[in-house]
Length: 82
Image (cartoon, rainbow, N blue to C red):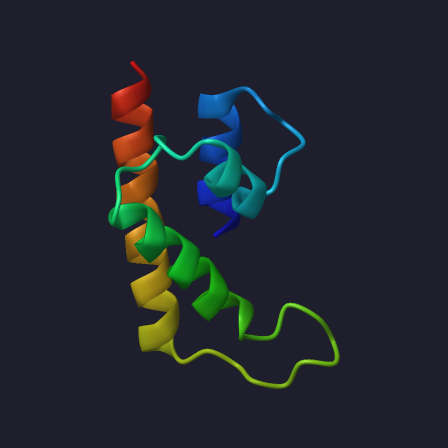
């Protein structure tokens, strides 16, 4: 998800924004309803341990799904921005 956030920052020119802020502020960045897929993927990925107090670890399949989705959306954004 961090890689997608970095690409979204580059495309929008807002180097400080979070992916959530970008998705809220730039409604046309990703066409609906695909924008909701990105938002839901962010929420899904956030369920896993990013902080020490969180104990749920993703399975390989969970990680592969999120990485694949992020790579596809990142590729789309890069190509669309050219």
